[in-house]
Image (cartoon, rainbow, N blue to C red; front, top):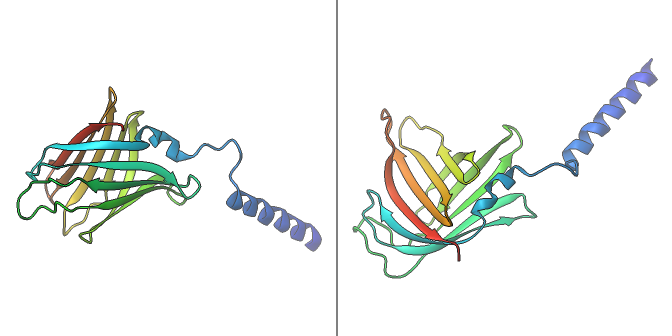
Length: 177
């Protein structure tokens, strides 16, 4: 009986190890739903409470052997905005499949020291929504990318605690380079 239990445990542990080490060959990466974002995009601000006029580029590309979708952004010289707007802004966004929740997650970093953790959804084949966890002491953030007729539009929105309305801080759009 001990031998039968030992063999069963060996079989189960080997099976679990194989599942963790290698995904089945037919497994499709959850990042595939975001493939419409891939490439280098122009971005020109259009609206938002930031009151800035700027242009730049951002690039979404798969990194780390396709396990991460990374966005790198650059602001072109000539940015104009209020004194509290950072015209030399740069940031990184990393999107990854979370193995625990089985959802897409993202983490954002910028040169001002901000770090935002997002849950990512794809409500339709050309829209990605990033929603931060609600914080009781600070705002919640909403980032949206939408591709329509070859133009990528984006919004970075803020919702203050106790409010139900998202306010656009920055909106932009542009074509693929």
